[in-house]
Length: 132
Image (tube, rainbow, N blue to C red; front, side, top):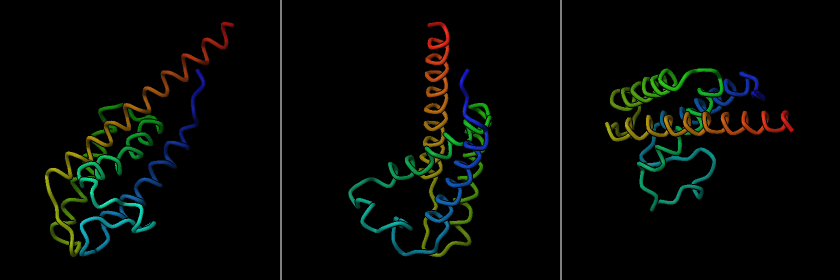
């Protein structure tokens, strides 16, 4: 089976963690802050959707780095609980909510599913190519 090196998944985890930290752990008075450009985030997009999207790459990275589905989702859940706890007590201008934690965990689970599906599809194409 043709598999990506683990370091690609680990790199994606690190990059995702940096982005998630920049977006969620920066003091702000705005509901949603994007470190790249204020114009990239449409104010009409619900915060729930943005939270889901933010954690999808983390789920993909955790899966590609070799974690099984359940531990990968649990890692993302632990990270989001840590973020929400910091937003309650430490980060000024941030609101913590259970809905954010659920959306973040859902995003990571979707990412894990995407990575597993991609691996399965890539593996099947490699096997078919070897047979022919």
